[in-house]
Amino acid sequence: MKKTQNKPIETSETSAMLYMQHSQVMVVYTEKSDREVWTSFKSGDEAAFNYIYRKHVADLFNYGMQICKQEELIRDCLQKMFVDLRKNQAKLGDVQRIKGYLFTVFHRELFKFLKKERKLNADLTSLENEENIFHIETSHETKLIDEEFALEQKLEIANALNKLPTRQRQAIIMLYQEELSYKEIAEVMNFSEVKTARTLVYRAMEKLKEIFEVKKA
Amino acid sequence: MDEKIKYIDFEIEDFLNDEFFIQWVKNPGEETNHFWLKWIENNPDRRPILQKAREIIAMIDYKERYVLSDQVYMDLYENIVEKSHQTRPDGRYFQWSGWHKAAAILFLVFSTVYGIDVLNKRNKEESENQQVTTWLTVDNPAGQKYKFQLPDGTRVHLNAASSIAYPQNFDGEKRTVRMQGEAFFDVTKDPNRPFVIQIDNNQVTVLGTSFNLKNGEDFELALVEGKVEVADSTGGVITLLPNEMLIKRKNGEVTKTEFDPLEIFGWKDQYLIFKDDSYPEVIRKMETWFGVTINSTLKVDKGWAYSGSYHNKPLNQVLDGISISSEFDYKIKDKTVTISNP
Image (tube, chains in turn blue, purple):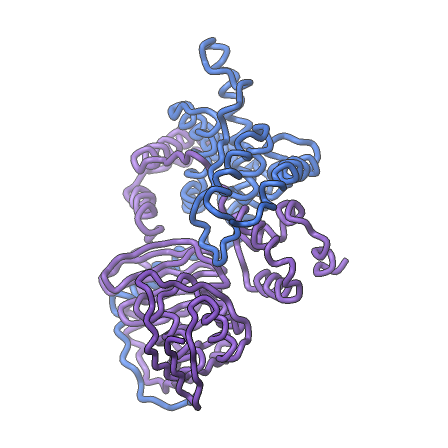
């Protein structure tokens, strides 16, 4: 290591500088905690709402489509939820994690929609038959060094996961893929105790343990 | 209870059920990385179980992912804003202006960019305020890494064969540094003075965050915490969120992927990592890491690739490790290594 004194370096900052300053404006929201963004939204800040929508709408849409594959219904449901939130914004409570909160509200809203829909339309696929929702895939690229599982094992794990009860699959995917906490999963799935969510995942993993323990060929 | 002791008896299903562990796999931060890398080091026999648990968590995904089209994204936003303002109780009327539309569209391409008026003003102020600054350079030869702090308290791990130039004092509206090679930054938070790294045609802007930046053949930026933006000379901006890595190749190809923290910045904690590396790549990495010159007459197959990780190991042990799978002889004399067929 050597330290030297140099002449001033010419920096070519003209166009690039512009973008740096854009980020200064943007950072108003991204550097804030969820709680602060939510407070701004509650006080009627349009840009804060824009930020919330941008960040979460795609995940919510995908989540809804897992439960009911009717795009129009999911869109209507998202619209109703966001419109209601905006209309009642001043009255809303504090929120620590926006994603978990939106998932909970959206899930509740979606089931209200489905209930109404089912009354109107008797042919609608019954949700009691939940076998084909929240299907899991084990992606082949995990970007880890030293992979412990061979491709066949990954496929076997996916198979076993998809044979689990729907509620276990849903909890697993929300925990690992959506990165919700057990507390948030319990809220979304309407469990009175957080422990229930934790147990759901534990039971599933215990059941699959035999497959995990097979040595790589 | 001591966290480290708690994990000793953990079976795979316990790791898979543990929020602190899951958090590390999905969103590694400097603290969790430190904890888990240390833990693996202290419990080498548990490594396979932990690695399997990591892999399971990382590979679980929706079988079918439903994507919101740009059109629906826009329409939905427009409807929400219109519908909720029709009956606003306080009587404020909302205008669906181009400002909002532009904001929503731009996000689809590269996060949001707005507030042009503010920028123009600031730009002028900036140019009137130019002054001469003394720049310092830290220059690492191959074989040497260096850890130091910039005037604002930002911590830098500079990898071997890399250099950084920075002003003696950060007295401008932003903290600008220039670099070559590879470094890990833990940038001190200062919302009023963005931290800017100027590197070839790319400019990386941050406020307070930690990330690894490598500018060799390709430009590689891996973000641990916070948020960074990369602007190129043509004005394109890409935003990076935690756990994302941006790769810009010399041929112009740009990709965003996930990454394995150990592979990308294990180097700063003395991990020398090979991941499906070609023979020339393995040689190059060893030369840079140990500051040696390697002469090789070894003939390798076309598909030759090597993976392995070495923590704090001397050159001969690394060579021993690689030679197990490749069967070669080597001699080390001073700073020169000769590799040949056995």
